[in-house]
Each structure stands twice: as structure tokens, then as C-alpha cells.
Image (cartoon, rainbow, N blue to C red; front, side, top):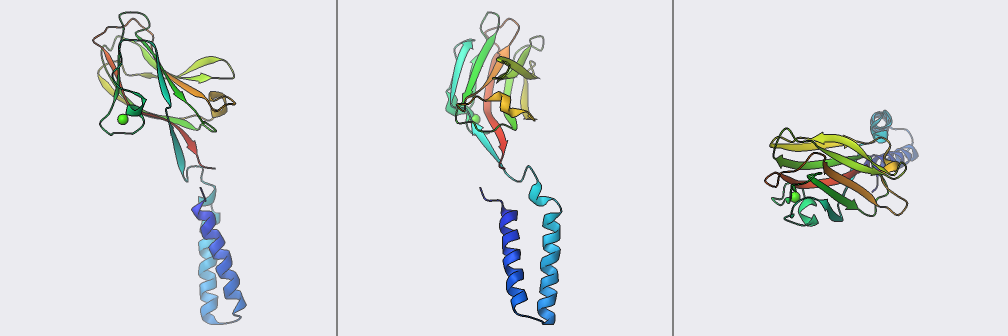
Length: 198
Ligand SMILES: [Ca+2]
């Protein structure tokens, strides 16, 4: 995606060149100074902003390693606040659930966006993980609420290269470490890998 500031910068340079070609004129001098001031503002930092624009990579597939019978499909977690949620109940076992969320075509990771909720017991423990391909283990990024609560998070990941492999695969996991109760439920509205457009 083209950087709009770069495009504006090119336009300024082209306009400046055309103005100079018209030789001396007080109007031209005034316009020229205006262009220089705009250029100065752009050069002061906007162009190098890492969050000028960003992309969101949604999940390609789901895999219930442990848990109850799910309701929904991966398409339910590909759009934020569309009224569709993927529901995974806990199993009467330990772990209560282990849900793998798989991504493909990943070329960069700068963060992750999660919108989920849980109805169950505050005494339970559940976390959110990303698979670290360098260390070949899951890294826990945060504990998810285990009382009946929403879980909206955006996490910045400064070392994202460890979390996808050479084939563009990445994997997130919701993991309920303690024993499960079948009346307790995990609901996921949306999850996406976040990357800066650079
Ligand atoms: Ca959704």
C-alpha cells in the first residue's frame, strides 16, 4: 500500500519544481514558502510513523485439541462485532479446553487483537498463547478473565518473527489450564494478527 505522505511529498517536490521554472514573482515566492512549510511538517516525523496503516490477518482454521462440543466455525471469528461468535464449552477434564487457532500466509507479526468472553468460574485459570517457532513451545501472552467477563485486548509484539514459520504458518491457543466444567463457555467474536504496513 502506497504511503500517502510519500505521495504528498512527491507532489510537493513536483509543484516546487514547476514554480521555480516560472522565475520571480511575489505570488510564486509566497506559494513556494507554503510548500516548504508543509514539507517541513511532513519531514518532522509523520512519514516515519510505524502505525500509519496496519493490516489484520484473520484465522484460517480451528482445531479443538481438548474441550466440549463447539458451536460455530472459523468464519464466526473473522469479523469483529458481526453478531457471530464461536462457542467452545469446557470439558469435564484437564485441561478444560485447548483450542488451536491457525493462520496461513503470515509474513509479519507486530501484535494480536482478541475479542472474546467467558462465562464460568473466577477460580479457573485460562490463558492466551502464541506458538514460538524458534523455541518450539507456546508463549503465554496474557491470562484471560475467568469470571463472566468480556476480554478485549490488543497486544503489541516487538519480536514477532518468532511466531510464524518459513511457510507463513502461525498458531494461537486459548488454553484452560485447570479442570473444566461443561456448563462453562468460551466465546470468541474475533481474533487477528496485527502487522504494520511498512
Ligand atoms: Ca465475529
